[in-house]
Image (cartoon, rainbow, N blue to C red; front, side, top):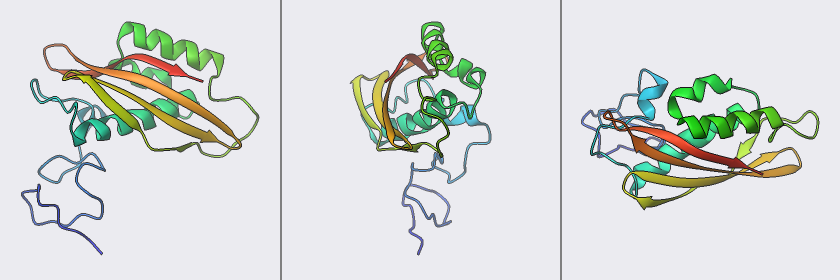
Length: 156
């Protein structure tokens, strides 16, 4: 059964609620992966329903990098210099690759909070086989385009 999303201008029904799949208000998916993580200046999703969607999308990509599914260079544009340094050291240390062969990582709910309108702090539990890890990160809106970038990341 499909539900109609009242926020969309088109009459096309959706199987998921608005914002869960990263669609824009016109009901289209972004054509470029980076488009899902960028926001126009002054449209900060912090504090609203969009901050949770932004954090969930980035958490999925971050866990893919930490588990070796995605190369870390793919997140270079989405991280600050300090954030990328932290990410690279976690990847080198194999923070989420210990314990032999495991299946796909399962992400728990992403818990996010907004300490300011241009920042989102989030954490997520990652289940890898019988092991459980926590990944925490901070996203900040930076630059003239207002792109969201990861400025800090930690995994245990």
